[in-house]
Length: 263
Image (cartoon, rainbow, N blue to C red):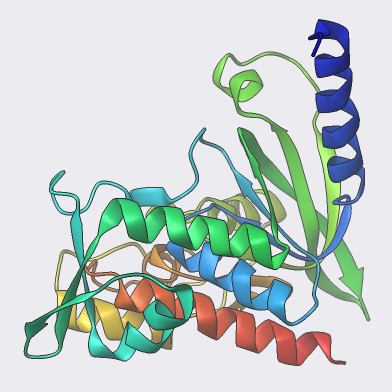
């Protein structure tokens, strides 16, 4: 077979353009391709909703790849085992309700299941702002403003593009970037005890795991938080290399949004 360089380039440009044009208006725009948003994307797509994940880095997966201090093993508790089994990930019981997983297998499998379910992941795209609209006189997050990550990193003066979304999920992890953008640029209060991003507490795995799932919620009209962004927004403890709460958070936000999209 003769290899045509132009044909290769044309195939990439045409396929990517079609994928991108189909993602300009979505049901749910998820910011950050960490484990919570990947799980959310999987369940949203399974329910027939158009969900897209925007990840600023080259590789989706968030902090799950590195395991604990670069030992590429992670822990989940028995609460998360039904999700792990649905994903088809190998887990090994360690007693007292703990299970270990190879972080490379777990992360790559969740990414694959998310994409195969129908959720598109755009990597190397940075969310720089939100679309701000009013519904019945009330402010609402109605989408995202995106640019290429290298453009933002190099501080080039290149205008971004807008993406319309019925709902947005901040899954940016420890920074809770989207929540901070909303409070800083829109001059509004979040649904937290301070009206702003409260900030993450020090590590307490037991409380952090419960807090992550419990505070997976709407933090401002149209904007939800999941995973570590929920901890940071509402002021909960971090939990280290245990990921059951992250997975549970992703499933919970998907279930909430699936129910809301029915209306």
